[in-house]
Length: 205
Image: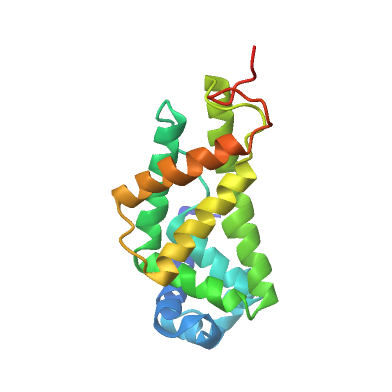
């Protein structure tokens, strides 16, 4: 396979993914059709169906293209710093146009089991490792004990960001991110440790 062929495939994927995101923003998941994607991207339906046999898979490809795969979280040297950096990024994404599309997909998922399963796998399960990394670092630094629950942290962050985005309760700025970390996330992590843990989550001597 020569470089021209590779470039052509990459360009076609980009055009299709961008078309999906544009249509999701304009008409939503339920009204977006594979025909409309093909027309917007100037691609054949056969090309789309060969790579993505159903609409949920096509949508997730567009999300991965737009937002990227799960990455290693920033290592700031402290649990609080890591959490603040993560919350700031989550809020930045959620309050923009991309966040509006994702919020719309989550709403549509309540009516579509296939979309719900696909979103959970790609938007939730693949990000779990990020929370596991943050907790493991904090345990290694002695900030938390072994009982700290990365799954609980993930659920709380997901719920708070989504609720703030959908309910328009206020700005999703740095002040909000820091308030969530200090008043919710850190206390939740420390309370999730086994009874008898020390002040910083370390086992008593």
